[in-house]
Image 1 (cartoon, rainbow, N blue to C red):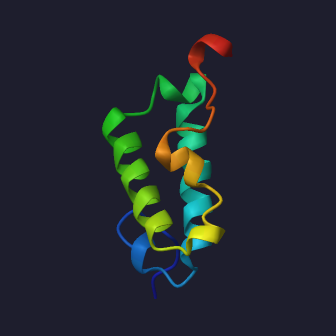
Image 2 (image 1 turned 135 degrees about the horizontal axis):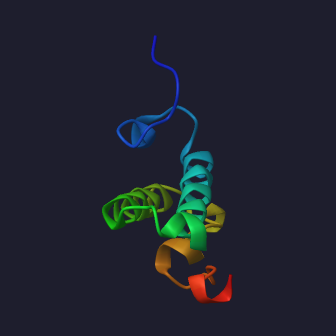
Length: 82
């Protein structure tokens, strides 16, 4: 029995795309916080962002509340402001 959500199974997960997108958004925000950003590989952030975009594209437009992050228009903390 397999338990958990990973990059490899998040798109086929039974949790629903809205929940999965919220998880990816939280992960990206954590990765981009100033202290964590220094330790996070750029490839990991790019991969997570691509997964988030795929999840958001699979949602109905009106329920895609995390769309601002995936489109790059969300205000994220920068290392200079922390």
